[in-house]
Image (cartoon, rainbow, N blue to C red):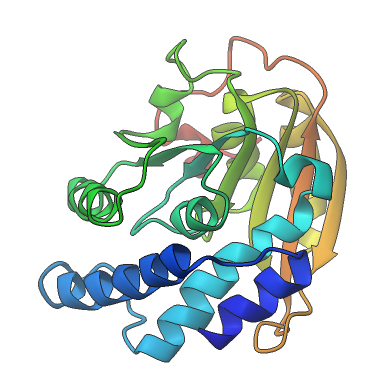
Length: 238
């Protein structure tokens, strides 16, 4: 698991034997389930390690050392087969993780992996982010909201920031030139109560191919009018 060690060593995190085994079992289950359910186009063990596990862990680079040690409430929007949330949960078992996706087969797989790895403090919520953000159990609840390869920033802000508490943080995994996307997302970010946008290039070996983390700090409560009805943020971004 060389790529995982590179990131965890950089962050000063030492993986236990249990955590190492959890990554190996997760990779094996993903390969087996993918034969039946088409969970990911990435199928080789080496690519899963680099492009799913290691890439997911790069999100920790956007958190300061103090927050890495706290009992954070973290949500993963559009988690798919559990990325980036589950690799982060393995590395930081003290957090509480809520994984959100609208696809039933993804829920079936992720719940199986959570059980198989003996993970506590994690739940999968099936549904659209627009609907879940209207649920008082989840709205304005999370310290950190993660999203990887889900939508452009102007749409993502409306899906994610209503779930983020004031003082919390959205971390979006992005790739390529972000100038145009950041400019287009400025209105949506402000409208959702966000500010202090920063961009952190990922320079970890093997992942230094134009990957960025876009971090948005939540400064104000999101107006009750947002998010709009399911599908509208994507079809008609702010």
